[in-house]
Image 1 (spheres, one colour):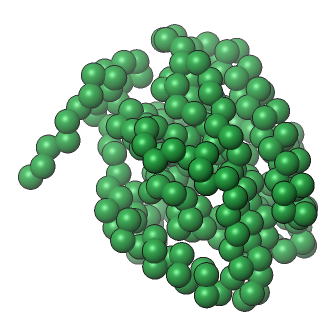
Image 2: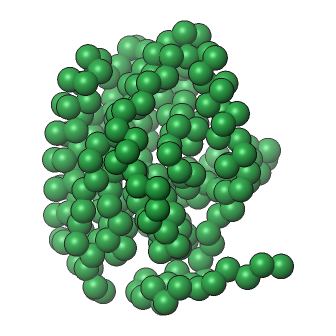
Amino acid sequence: MRVRRTRPEHFDLPRSDAAVHPPHRLLRVLRPVARAWFGRRYDVRTYGEEHLALRGPHLVASNHIGLLDGPLLGAYAPRPVHALTKKEMFEGRTGLALRAVGQIPLSRYEVDPSAIKDCLRVLRDGGVVAIYPEGTRGAGEFARMHNGVAYLALVTGAPVIPLVVFGTRDPGGVMDSVPARGARFDLVHGPPVYLESQPWPRRQTEVRRAADELRKTFLDHLVEARRITGRDLPGPIPGLRETS
């Protein structure tokens, strides 16, 4: 059995030497298949993929408007992506499939040290982690943002790639609605944002300040993504209250 080499940075605080780097060999195989399926069914357009370098750690921070956001990101990202996914999805066959393609379970309602350490393991190994900083599907306008992406960037120094997705939910569509065949999806990547890594301890005020800076950048990128595509977001999900 091949033993994964533990890099020295895994012993920095918080330690990630005992964390899991999820396997993604199956994801490498399935990505072309998924792209072919989406390409036959939908009009998928991508912009700015060059911002995600082919080597080194990266964080992809995306808005979240529809059920197909995750599969699209996994299929069309230039590199295999380990996405944080709500732990409720990791049950039965769906859970087995998510684990097989390298996704990371996350508890959305409490601090999840295991998920954080698994993300650090991936980033310190030079991989890509995707996060939905809004925390759940909604209007996708970055009206609210959790601190996780800022924290991981401050710990690792990995660049943050903002991503705006259009089209995966129609205006007025409910939580799990899917657009009809032939719909157009746009994935717009922005230039990388660099936060200088900070040594332990990282105070909550520093993380919050970094998160606020990132949110301003994401809002600017949203304006640019609208200009590039000529599109807008679908608005709030009916019956779902969104708070800032």
